[in-house]
Image (cartoon, rainbow, N blue to C red; front, side, top):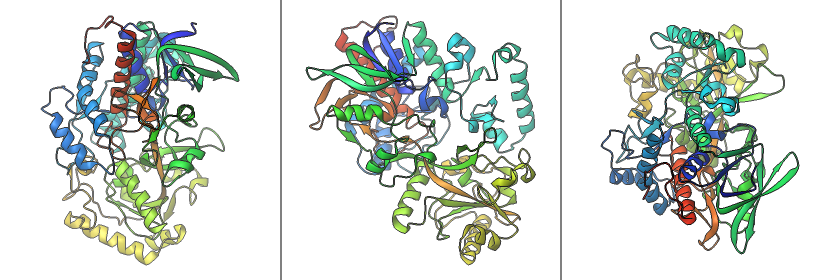
Length: 572
């Protein structure tokens, strides 16, 4: 393996692999350095959704409409220069993915603030299932989906399959049979191992990028973490990497692109930066993955930071791993907290949010309520037997799949609480029983009228998209009245950090005086989000990550004087 490359990219998530494929397609000699023993980073374990306004996939969106929307939903300062670059380059990045044979598809999903001016329901882009066996020897080295995105922790599901099965929609048993038979009839892959050959969601994004990168001759070092940025005469000229205590210095002729994720698994950095630090163990990203080592390496050479006070929030729940003693697994409760026949309250037994809102809005509401009352983080999801029959609650599957008799005895009154009455349930979890009965009575009134005057639950298209379409007059509001009653604690989890190295519109890392540090670029959660604390829509993390990885590759290629190589698309 060479020690010298045109560009070195730290991290193999969506930002890193987009940068790598783009740079390799432009004829550069590229190395991707991945600290973990798997390729794909947090992106591979995510939903793999990419938020790209005006993406050019057959819709009539516009740049002006997108700017109006982003400005309307901004929750604090944003970076207008980087937003402009994102909106200009996003469609070009999508065109490039199509050019190299990928199949981006626009989904009819509402933006996370559908009530805001300029909101639409077609800006989220996904990728179809991908046959992982196309990767050859790299097949087992791409990260698998988390348990929540697999049926019985084994069978690959796409969005439609997962929604049909988890909500027990019409034909859900046929869907289960189809998914399972597809897996077991794949005899060739079963002889290799347990993993489903089909990649979906985030893995369906990462898989084809890895395939294209390998075909272009790109190299990947797996298990090597960047420890230092090498600087010579004021310019970043390489990296020092470490694996099992052994160090190696690698040279980059034209640039280093940092795409190594955020710092959510570094408690010291959380305590230093976050408004409410929370606990690393509530993060829903791969355990101990993103510890901010390259962020610290950047700060050590004078790089500035921005937007480090907050994360990409998501409510999470903890449950023990059934396959291994003494370990817990984090389950996202993205939609669970807003399903009908339930309500969320803080530890003062007060509602504090429209429970059906976007998960980052829910997390921000948890944080704001914690700052105001000190009685949140965690809060409580309260639900009845009807909810239990129909829906998931974190890792607790509906009763048809996971009846109460199948819940391990040691989980009761530790992770999930059950009682024959609301008052008894309140006593178990130390809530005010009178207030809980009052809150539930108000929710039942809302279910009858179809209106939630306090928080407007079910009042917009995003909310209703994840309700129960059979319920009228409001699919997000169902009575909470059928015993037994249940409760589960909800933690302030995250999908990563929103802040990191401060960059300009060309993805160049800036120093404390807003001057570019020569040879250093960043994208993804290693850099500050262009949206600040806003989370505009599904894929609001991966979209900018890929776009600024794309921009960084173009900047390095321009400096190297490279031609366009095999592909002819010009990013401008």
